[in-house]
Length: 358
Image 1 (tube, rainbow, N blue to C red):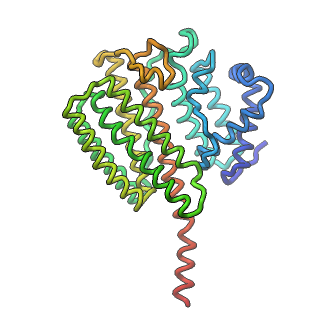
Image 2: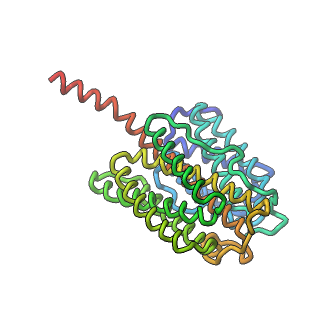
Image 3: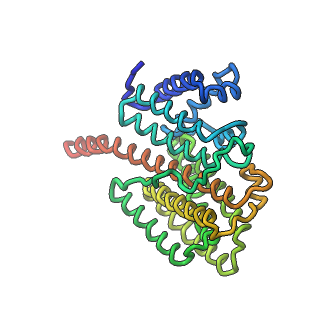
């Protein structure tokens, strides 16, 4: 069966998806829940998953759904299914792709599994189907993109400086911290989506689904902000800080995206890494009894389709899963832009040589 693809293409992704789900259907543990949900007609599901992995690995924008909502609708979903799903996926990726590409698929799959475990299991399922072990880390080791060049190091350093001031100003007032955090986080998606919207027709090129992805991110971050405004009840001073921070960051990020979009996406990726860490600390405070696990506001219950009696902990888990997804998307966009720039370098150098020779 080993085919060892040495590149990621739509055809190779289709090969992976079809081979993987053939194993899933035959598996004694997770096969039945898929068969019960999908039935006999697997073609639509396989097509959807090809689009999903195309969007994840090639940033094609082919997938338009919400995997969190889809998995929350599964009755009988259990935490022990995820390791089996991941083991089959790792096995399949290892059979079909060269090691470095297989590792890339597996890394994405692990992050997706962690996000789904944090977001898809709670509230909507009966208590006997739930893994009630406190989930205060996502994943078990912090996900960090190691800076690969000077622009990455600048982006990482800039975010670390912002984290320092956030720690100094808010300490462990996580609800108020989240308000300012989400005010900043709501800006990049809107700015990036707007500039991509202008750039695509100007260059007469397809934008690969980036516009919708970025605008969806902006809307998601806005809902985070509205949720924590209901929870933390910011003071007049904190509302003023929100206005100032938003105005300053919008203009700075706008200029950065115009000049260096790869660095801009990397900044957001590192920013979301810090967001995941902050919400993990927030969960630790709730689990330790140092922060009251208050009732979830209605706006959060409606947005994430939570149970009517959902609490703050479920809200923070949902927000953290969203931030982890934004982290991976923006680091992925930055990687794509870096790869494109590297691919163009030989062309530019050859053009310069021909020009000089002339």
